[in-house]
Figure 1: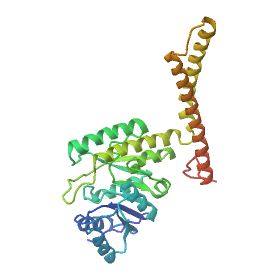
Figure 2 (figure 1 turned 90 degrees about the horizontal axis):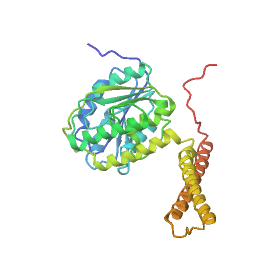
Figure 3 (figure 1 turned 90 degrees about the vertical axis):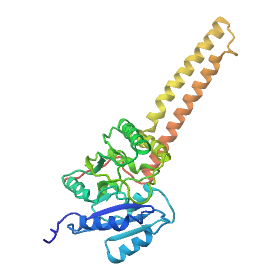
Figure 4 (figure 1 turned 60 degrees about the vertical axis):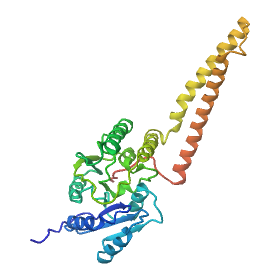
Length: 319
């Protein structure tokens, strides 16, 4: 029976790779079987500085299939940079991302496309039955996901799952840095995007070695703080720094006023009192916080005006 050709928006599948040569042939064949019903689909592999035969296998795949595109980095830049390059070069209306280690299941992709067709802007995978080590991956992931949900108010069970689908106009408007690829839903939430999370299969790694290290967890937590700042204060940094500045300055002036009062009215020596040092410290901190807020306001306004970047996101205009 012939495959049914599905008329659909164009689709780009973006896959970052680092030394996944052993997994590539099977990954490609499974992807080909999944996307064969779709009329316009491309597969973008990003070779993130591999030192094995990954690039040679990619070149062979490209020679026999024009739908395979290759982006080769000069060195290893990390998963966030690889995904960002894939987004920049993707031409599809819908962009799907996944890992290249065969732990994500290519057969899950149609479920993501269906949810996008249902009207969601972003669909995220949830590895309900995750096949990873408990101490080195599962427990740190649960802590990170809980913290991310509390700080960003985006209720996702699995921020770290690479298997996701996005509308192109959403993901191409987001600039990624550091380890922020795992917090793309949170970074996009300021635009008012609709997000859906669906369970996906997750398989144990059979070839190659995991690239995950504990240091990535800590780098990710630092980026989570950045995302929280961008979500809450990116257009109003004075509200972040100004409030503690006012409180600190007020307490410093109040403490200093009390010391001046007892000095002039009760002739009490205040030169050797720790309270005087506290008053000076609080006042200086208050000035510094307010100064940082003012500098932040100047930088933010310059950023938006130079890039002509709006501080809003429009879904549609009807005239």
